Image (tube, rainbow, N blue to C red; front, top):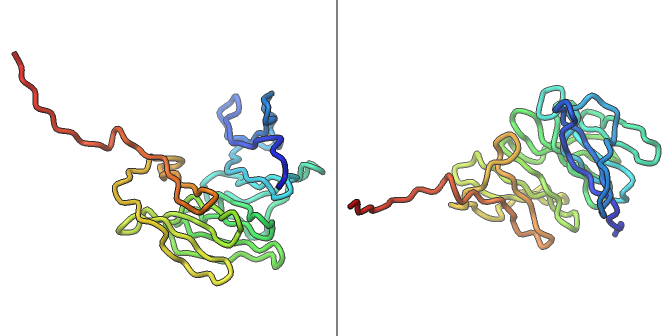
Length: 206
């Protein structure tokens, strides 16, 4: 496992543009990872810690997926990634998962073949790799019963992991509730426990 010495995150530049920054794990001054004009989002480390993958253009038709080499300070675009965003690098470095703009299909890029492949239909959001790299977890809130799924990379088989039921996930980026996954594969959500609750009160006025 690569020691954690820096964090990478999406922040806002002084003029409000979305930018990708790194910061030392023990604190310090954030540093922009590129000299681009903004619209950068969804950073994810390479397994060896020497690169950062991110979406350039945000959730727009012109979005694409790029990789920054921290060794050479060069940025390259992943072939065929126009219209994709929210990339996630696999633990073994062979694959990248991402979403299509508009219909939110879950896509898989194989660095060996240099090709993209659809793993799911529309409505997916917040892809997350399992710790062993065998699965990509995602949620589909547009289904009749909002649920959390995973797709097995070896077989491309999709299975339901859990129903969200009345959990009331909190809205995240672009109005989509954020979801994650714990090291053991359990669903992780941010729950909205305030504005979506309804109460009835009995009041006795004097």
